[in-house]
Amino acid sequence: MTVNDIETRLGRSFDAAEQARAEAFITDVSALVVTYCRKTFTDESGVLTAPGDVKAVVCGEVIAALNAAPGISSEQIGEIQTTYTRYTAGLSSAARAALRRFRRRIGSVHAGGGS
Image: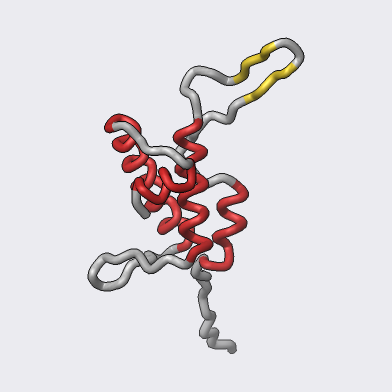
């Protein structure tokens, strides 16, 4: 996942400050995805091998984080009102739902000895 992936989806280029923010959010969201899925999506050389669905989730979460306006929770112009979601470090419920099928299951086996 690169800043270019985010720029392409937004249809515009970033200035240096936006690039730095995007890189930071890509790092954050990628770490959250790895933790949630309980696995990495890279090969031995560190090259990203994530399926398209995982890349789409990372891009969507990064874009949402970039669009979160700190300090502004809502605004109204005439009869039109918009409420913003604050960015918090964590995956959205939609992201978790999309990633669920990539999540490793953790289980235990009981090797019981009965009497």
